[in-house]
Structure formats: C-alpha cells, structure tokens
Length: 230
Ligand code: SF4
Image (cartoon, rainbow, N blue to C red):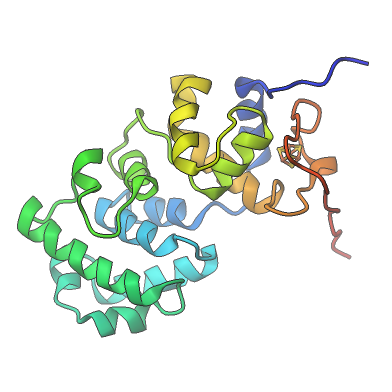
C-alpha cells in the first residue's frame, strides 16, 4: 500500500475541484458579482454582509438593500435604522449597518465615490478586513495577486496539509508560498464551494470526496454520510 500523503498536491486538487464543483451552488457573493457585472460597490457591500451569515440570508439581504440603493451616494443617504431593517437577519446586522453607512460616506468623501483598488486603501474603510478586501480585489478589480481566505478556505487548506496555521490571516500568507500563482484568484471559489457541500466543518463527506485518495485529512476525526434523496 502506498505511504499516506502529508500534503495533497495543489494542482491535482484544483483540477479535480474544477470539475467537481460544476453544478453545485456557487457562493452568494460570487453569484452577486457575476449578476451585477463585477460592480465593485455591490461586491464590497455583499461581502460585508456575508460575514458569519448563511449564503441564502446574504443573498436575500443584499437583494433587498440593492433594490433601495445601488450606489455609495444613495446608500449613504439611508438612515442606519433603515439599513438595519433591510439587511436583517444577517449576523451582527446592527454593527454591519453602521459600517455600511460609514463606508459609503468615506467612499464619497475620500475616494470620489469609487471603491478603492488597493489593499491598503480598502483596509481603511470601516468594517473591511482582509477577507473582504481580497474578494473585492479579485472579483471586482480582477486582481490575480490575491488569495481570499475565509473559514472554509482556512479549514480545508489545513485538512489538505497545504498549511499548518491557526488563523485565516496566517493561512492567507502561507498559501502565497504553498500554491502557485495561477491558482490564487480561484482558491476561494473552489474551496468555499467544496466546504459548503462536501468538506463541511463537522462530519466532512470524505468517503464521497473526489480528493479522498490524495487528502491527508489532517485533524479529521469523524466523517459524515451522504444522505441520499429518495
Ligand atoms: S472531505 Fe475529507 S477527503 Fe475531502 S477534502 Fe475534506 S478532509 Fe479531504
């Protein structure tokens, strides 16, 4: 029997996932970005709303908000209370409403109404961390220099043995060394889609996973069973 791998080869994983995610639901922000023609402002706001929130809730809240306001100017004129009501029940909707309004005001006053296209400037906006900034740079500004790491990417990159890290930010920096540049902009799409459907936080579906033969399954102690539809 071949010795178990300590690290799944990145190219094999990415090529297999390219086929395997075909037909699965794509992450909410990716869908919003595609539907809105990579509009940087809507990608920014949807990503801010998506933190620790289920995709269906993010999609519905974004749709309600964008029906009322689609630009920094119109959104900045909404009261915080109105934004709260529109985005409820996303997690931390009160804080997010405050950040959304403040970010719109700063985009208007400091960036002439345009969403910045550098990490340094994006990080100066209220409520914007590296995950949000990276996703805006990748999806809206078409950067090929960034990797967006959320909890799915952090978890799966560790299970695959690509990195050994404790936080998403450590994972982002380690992935720049572990993966070739060509994979950087799509790591998020592939691993988030896989994480929502197969490599779930608890009870990942390893027996059904297309990566099972190459994945060292670091830290996985219990796996789940696929529930077949009748
Ligand atoms: S589901 Fe299991 S085999 Fe597949 S990537 Fe996750 S840990 Fe590896």
